[in-house]
Image 1: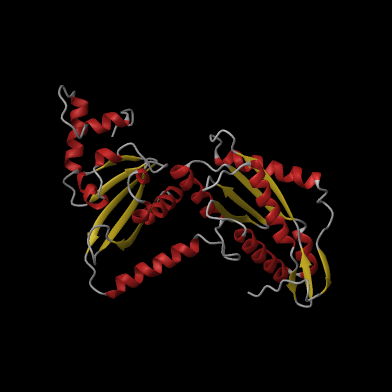
Image 2: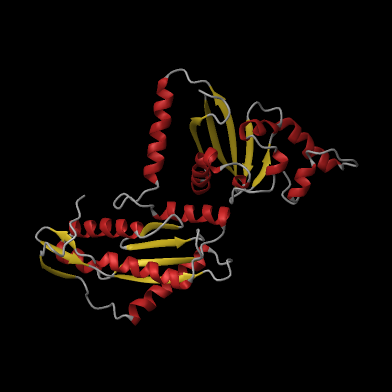
Length: 328
């Protein structure tokens, strides 16, 4: 298909048109042939914008293709029904290969659908096909794949979103509801000193505890993930209430206060503090990469301003009245 044609030209292939030149007619013939394929066929670009879909795709998605062409697929089709396509799309783009999975049919009760995605010239070609289920083994496979998929999005140590899943989630939410209003880059001060003095078992406990506490301070408008080592990122989206700089500051202070609560390890307890960099998306047009860079620079300014280069972690005999006991 000639990529020089704009989306409105692609849309015109589905409506009557006169004075078709040979080149357009040739493309129209190809599309007519693809409409005979007894399966749904969708072509998505790297941003999940629909480049093409055949007539059978309408039966699978429940939406006329003229409404989808040239738009992000989730702008029209509910995300819940196509959650697996996001994962396939991301995997195929990264691997530049092919992948398949089986999930419940979107239109036939008690049946399953085979979804195959292939990388082609920078796009992802997706084939949707209903298949009969002969026995319960297929359902078990689908459940197992779903569980594996969910685990692959979680950081193995802390249980919160991992780096890849976090950035994917931010991108998806940005497409659906606008870019984050601000972004926090968080790390644990002098974490290496904790590992050096008390060992990695203690360090792992601190990471799990801090991750849990960060998430506990956030509502549904904030997405939190671990991006590596002792570093975390929190993206703040527009929620039910405005997210002003003052409110972001309040959230950061709550995170710090929560992190400072002592963590019991054996017969001692460890106290840690956080450094936090803040990037504000004042014009709602800053890309995620730039927000991360700005927040990273802000993080180091925060360390310098507050004199965080000195060791702040302290180890003292356990005082039961002060200690928050964390069990894992």
